[in-house]
Image (cartoon, rainbow, N blue to C red):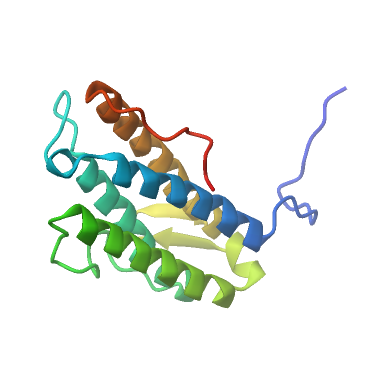
Length: 167
């Protein structure tokens, strides 16, 4: 016997609040990763031509900050447009920017209707799908690149935060 689940099923598996908490749990873990990096390695250390962890973190910020406005309004800028042009130069500045974006996510999230999560949209003019899928993409992208940070920290002899510790 096979089970099939309709894409139009009305059963709710996860609420918008639970999705936000899941994402913010990943963001808390990424913040711990930023904190674990030595100041002199966060912006410079690389293996095999991969980008330094600070650049990966800026990618997360550059998706989340304008992306939340796109999710809320349906009006999207091109990826990379609309974020501040001054990049953080220190760990403290990067953490401050991270925290500001976290606050913005928390402020905008309650303004998104439940129906909006199922609407199709074209994020940043390049990723098309339901809004919940776009958010999952951001989460998956963060997890993927955070894995690079784990490799960097271990190669520097630093024990990274536990991957499951999202508190």
